[in-house]
Image (cartoon, rainbow, N blue to C red; front, top):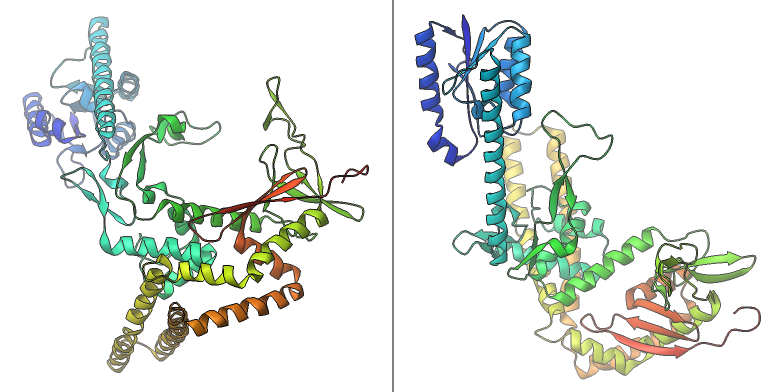
Length: 532
């Protein structure tokens, strides 16, 4: 008779109790006693699943044993114990029935499996106890991990995102100095420059900074990182739970769970070292929201406050609409009765009034441009942002340093290309392509370096420069009325966070400076009989 010897361990703790060598030794001894011929698994004398859970049925070595049984190439499947075969009773019964159907005998070292009802009952009881033990181990593991998280420790060392390293002694996340600087540069540049994610990725790639995966930066990677709250010092653990797979979703054998986001109140949050200030993180979230809204903007008609105007009654966004020749804004919740709580319970559509586009747009435009036209206000804000300890100066100097460092690498790269070409390592076309790429990158970086040097040279405001700033404000004030619609809309998006409409007044929340907000109320004309 031909026998397939099967062994399995899933953890270090199990390795101590059911070590692979000891299992194989016992299996070989039993085969010698019975006079069975062992069937090898390639170059190994036994079929071994090392590091696979007993709760999963899809295991490489076990699958090979089942395939041999289906082909009639083995007569006996021998394992050390039923829980080595599987820790689930349903899986044990499925395998026992499958082997019996193929005429293959299933045997174990620790117990006999006969055809009598008593033997089958004892086999099933062992399966019940094995499954119970597995669930107890899992329950103790989860409980211990939760207690560890309640003590402020990081449960999963692999949870360290880009910019952090795992401190095994303190069991928490600590700053990785080099990568943390990249994270700070990323956040401040995105908030300050008003870039899109694609342009931010291009900036990081141009500076030669490596992404978390070691390749080029991509917009999707940056979008996830810029929304990650861990950079403000809060790491959320136990955010997901296992659940049944979604309806109609195909899953392979053994993989019968999917991950579902838990309610926020069930998360366990621990404190770690923050890499960016909360106000910078909030500014980045506002910029991401605005970029998203701009991507969804209504392009059929021109609405100056598209994405900026909100309903003062329910807080919902107000969208631009047109009725014949009249443009107006209306709360998006007016036709959605499941979003606004009603006074008597339940939900109802928003009852906030509509507002004529011309009335609200003129008030917002005049208010915001009044700030820009004020020379003293402009000089005061420039002083705040140009102080020696300001984050604006630090980030500009950081980017300038990276530009200079990258520019210093080009001569060496060109020299290596030339040497490789001389040795015949590169064909002509590849040499030309690489040299063109280096020169284009060098030209772009040199241009950016000049821009940064120019901006840094203007940070220390002298008396003459303050006079120039005032003159600039005067020129801006003259040209504001000549801006196109797109230019005016972009100016508002740069300066305004939100505008709330409350029937007879507007609340304008501006983003000047980055760390603070100014809210001003401006009365609107009362609506007439026509509804406006």
